[in-house]
Amino acid sequence: MSQPAIILSDEQAEAHDRVSALLAGAGINLDDALLMPPRDGKSAVMAVMGKAGSGKTLLLAELVRSMRAAGVDIVSGDYEGRRRKDRRTLAILAPTNKAASVLRMRGVPATTIHRILYTPVYDPEYERIAEWIAGQGDRPEVEGLTDAALDRAYAFYQQNASVPGALAAAGLRGSDFITGWKRREEPLDVGFVDESSMLDDKQYEDLREIFPTLLLFGDPAQLAPVNQSGAMVFDRLEDGQKMQLNRIHRQEADSPILDLAHALADPDVDFHRFEAMVQEAAARDDRVVHAERVEVDLMARSPVLVWRNATRIRLIQAFRSVYGAPEDELLEGEPLICDGIELPMKHRKKRLDLEARGLIKGAQVIYMGLGRRPGFSKLHVMGAEDPQVSAASIVKIEKPDEEEPFIPFAARMGATFLHGAAVTIHKAQGSQWENVQVFAPDLYAAFRAGRTEAGVPLWKRLAYVAITRAQERLYWVVRNRLAKPTQPLTVDDLKALPKPGLELTAAEPEG
Image 1 (spheres, rainbow, N blue to C red):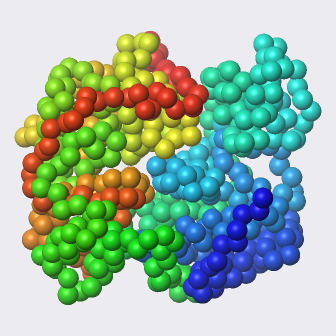
Image 2 (spheres, rainbow, N blue to C red; image 1 turned 180 degrees about the horizontal axis):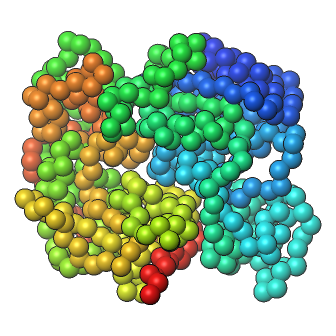
Image 3 (cartoon, rainbow, N blue to C red; image 1 turned 180 degrees about the vertical axis):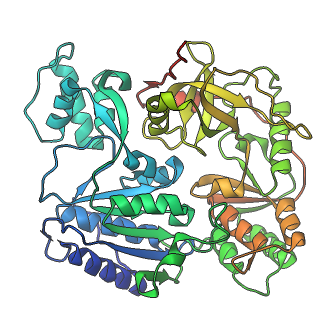
């Protein structure tokens, strides 16, 4: 049964036509489904910009559908078969696991930028399985794998187009078939990048090296990357390379959350007027809540969004206290944020292994319990395609008025984590949650400070980013109070997910 045709607005249709012309110049004709071999030395960049609700993701999804229908192959970074001179490919990318998962939930096969920059090296024996399920080789015979296991791998790939997932369905672990990771040396073809407002200059240059044809989708009203003085990668493009979607498209009911987000563009709306608008919206629609306190039950899966680090640390301590968490250990179900990988350069391969599995800086993780070895933790990486991992961990819990964080337990080296019950609005970019709590006293402090970013009051940029993280319900918290939990922390909902587990080990130091 065919899917109903998507009706694009005039603006979206114009943007679709301009992107189609760009692709036709690169040898991909969407109108006639005609593909020409890639042209060496030819490159192009274009940006589609618009605020929340302007239809960027709908346009991206329709372009992906058109390219697939034309015969363009989707590449994800988990495995790439033999290169063909005439093959045309598309990679759909996002800066974070959570941002990529938002696209995947909408049917767009997205992966992270990191997974494209670094590719896995497969054991030759298992590479034969990968080639077979990808339609590039004959059915192999592999010692230790039954015909039924190979059938499971093949069936999984037909549904999910993931080689690691297919091999896991056959009963294999990542350490069985991936021997290492390497930095990509050869370029790809066409790249679509969502949440491009988060890109810094280095990431942008890396992408330009890999993709001769690059299309950026982003929201210029969000916060610019840290240390870029309010500048975004869109700013370096010529006017002819940029398209602006202005109309707000509501596919279902009107959204009071989007109404509030766009009200921030009015120069006559100051903080006090905006809070009155929040109250008015809450009085007529339960998707906006004018909250007198932070709901602690929500913090384990969606952090409270704040501006100031001091506020973040206080809320984390309050969260742990109200659940009775001991100082020297974590409770199952506590949220964490990956703060990077602490491994010496001689263990670069292991660093790539951890990062490629989703443990990149800013990744949201749920603690699932102690691992089988000292210093290891069982973790659920939110938004990752294979979320269940076990990794050497260094957990740091910051305390108010203390310079050094408290470390309840740690491996000698591995992935480092901060607590994730509250995060800064900067860190929240690219993520979305069903329910979002915004700590309004922090935004009032930004309003009182009078700071601006790229000519816009900082509090408005912060508020815009924070409230557009909410998919279903926005809580505008106006008091520094914390509700009591209605139930203990749990990981039962995560354990029930039918995703294969991966065991990640960090190499021990030599000597």
